Structure formats: structure tokens, C-alpha cells
Image 1 (cartoon, rainbow over the protein chains, first blue to last red):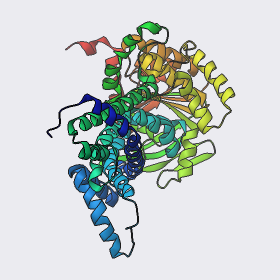
Image 2: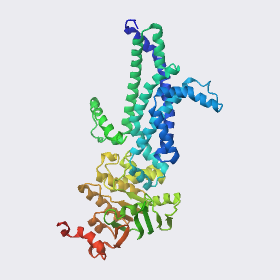
Image 3: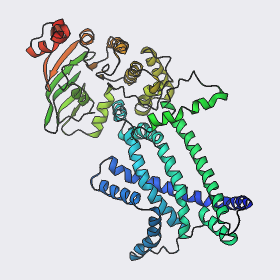
Image 4: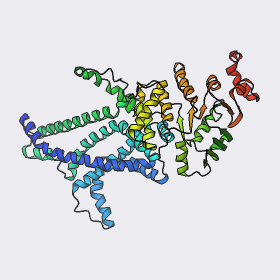
Length: 260
Length: 250
């Protein structure tokens, strides 16, 4: 934009962006909570083949996976209040952040439902039969046998989804929410150092994604420890921990990712 | 005493069990043999309602269930009276050997953890896995997994243990260790029903042999009768493959 590149701005903007991480993460985690709830509700009819609801779930999933998130944001922010007005519910005073969380939640819910479905069907049927044979009820079999394993299997899917949602939140500024991207844009409207601002923004997103990824890798290792074929005796000494790490992709692919 | 009365089962229009009547006395070891597709496994799975019989009745001592319209509570009770050892072991993969055995005791029978633990350790030692308590199924061989499966079934202290081809998925080398364990517990007077293709083992360990084909019991009796002097032509034909060498000549 005509102004010469100045690295000092990158640092300055980076610091100015930091407080807005809060808003972006709030959208991410708000929508993940909504998404998980919705995802489970949508997945169950398909897992248990409930006649009419099953069809509903399919339509829901294909709509939210088949249309751009930007359009969904607009539809939920502008169209939903109009529809609610018809049944005389006034939502004009509801903060825009709520609509944003709702939109991202419904969006990720569609992906969650697919993930939950895949993870639950990846736990083999034989273990459920064994649980019944031991005398467990359907509920006990689900909560004690299926769910813990499905959760471990779904960690990589969950990680992808959360990181994807984090990046998608960069569109929330279109509705005027002051999150990371929104703030980055206001920063350079004054100084006209657009490139520096976007660079700082990229760094912030990257650091966030990096930590989320590490966190999920750790969780995955913990939850899938039963699938690691390494015997306890041959633990690698501390200084050579990287040796262990090189094994991880293989474990994730051959076990956690199977059937997903 | 277990009574099966007129058990039938159809998958769609395919009738797999055509009215099975069978009586199993307490402490008896029953081997069910027969060609593939004869309905042996289906019959076994009907006994603990993993397969839903179309009709019939089962009674274990005083307790009985009619399969036409069974009550949910009865099915639950029926399952608690039996335990099963599966062809594919079906261990809980996210639990250690010890936890696999304890699970039913703690969750279903509500036995205090310490007591359940003690009993489970004893049983795992009995099947020769005292040193594998904390191993996950993925760290055990097939034979070891199946022995955990047997310990898991024994722990529940059931009226009857159902074995569904317990050695079919195993390497030939590992079959012996599993059969050895089954033979050992058979001597303790636990009622067992074993579906198997191991004829020598059936002959050796069972008190009663049932030969099935086409969804009916063709012949049943003590092993020395069934294996040596069977009455039915079909039984002779089937067993000839196991008892004579001529079957291998083409």
C-alpha cells in the first residue's frame, strides 16, 4: 500500500493482537461445545437407525458441510432473526457473538456428527457383545467400553476440527466481531502497514494452532496407550525420547485412524 | 440343569435352527460339532441372547425365559447366568488383562474393587498369565488373549460357560495352551458348552457330544459312542474325515 515494509510494526502489531486471542478462542470453544452437543444429537439417529430422524440428520450434515461457512454466517445472522420474528421472538438485542458461536457451532456440529459416527463404528462389535455377555446393560456397554475407545479414536478428527474452526473464525469479522482478523484489519487502516499486520496475524494463528496440535498429540498418546505395542520393559532413556516420537505416526495410522 | 426347548431361529427366510431340544446336566461338558453353517454357533449365541431366537424356551434351574416375547429384565438375568468365550477373544482393548477380568465383577456384580482384584489375579494365575496382569490385549499373543478371555468368563462364576470355537482363530502352535486351560477347568465341574472343530479335543474333554447339521441335532450321546459307533449315516460320514486317514486320499 505504498508504505515501505517495517519489521518493527510486525512486533508492535503482534503485541496488540494478543488480547484478541481471547475472543477468537471464545468463539472456537463456544462453538466446539455447541458443535459436540449438536454432533452427538445428529449422530445418534444415524448410529441407531431411527427412521425419520436419520433422514433429518443426513440433510443437516450435507447442508452444513456442503455450503460455505461465510454464507452460513450471513444466513444465521440475518435470516434467523427474520424467521424468529414471524413467531414473535425478538432477538435484536442478542449480541452478535452469540450468532457467530451458533453459526460455527452448527457448522462444526455437522463434522462432529460424522466424526462421532466413524469413531463409534470403528470400535469393533465384538467388544460390545463381550460386554453384553459379561452382563452389562446397553448403557454400561456404551459408557464403559465403546465411548472411551471412540474418544481416543476421534482425537485426531477432533484436533483437525478445532484447528479448522480456529482458522474459520477469521471470517467472523464480516459480521463486525472484533476478533483477531477484525483487529488486524483495523490496525492497518490507520498506519497503512497492511503486510506487517497480516504477517503478525499469521504468526498468532500459527502459534495457536501449534499449541493446539501439541496438546492433542499428547492427549492421543495418553488415550491410545493401550494400542502401543511397546513393552514396558524397554523404555527408552530420557535423552533419547525422540526415538519414541518417531513411532507415533505409525501408531496413529495403523490403529487410531483405522476405519475413520 | 439347562433345558433348551424348541429353539428356532431364522435370518429372513433362511431357517438356521429348526427346533432344537437339548438338556445339559450340571457339571457336564457338552461339545457341539458339525459342518460349517450347521447352526452350532447360532445355537450357542441364542443361549445368552446375543442372537435373538425366533421362538423357544430356555430354563436354567428354576429360571426360565420364553423367547417369543422375552422381558428385558429376563434377558439381562439370563446373560448374568452365563459367560462366553469368543472366537475372536473380544477383549476390551483399552483395558489391561487384569481390568478385563475385573470389569464384569465390579460393574455388573458390584463386588468391591479389592476383592474383585484378588479374585481376578488368582484366575489369571490359574490360566498361566500371572506375569501379564498389566499388559494390554495388543501386547499379548492370540493364545494369551484367549486365556484372558477364559479368565474373564470364569470370574463371573456363571452357571454355564459358552465357548464359541475358542481355538479357530489361533496359530496351530498356540492351540495347545488354550485347550490345556479349558481341559483344566473342565475337570473342576463347571458346566460348559463348547462349539469346536477340534475333534480329538472334543472326544477327550466332553462328557456329551452333539452332532448338528442343517439346523437340527442329528445325533447326540457320549463321546465314545458318537466317535466310534455313530448310528446315523451322516455322522459317520462327517467323522470319517477325522478318524480315518483314507479321507486324505483323492
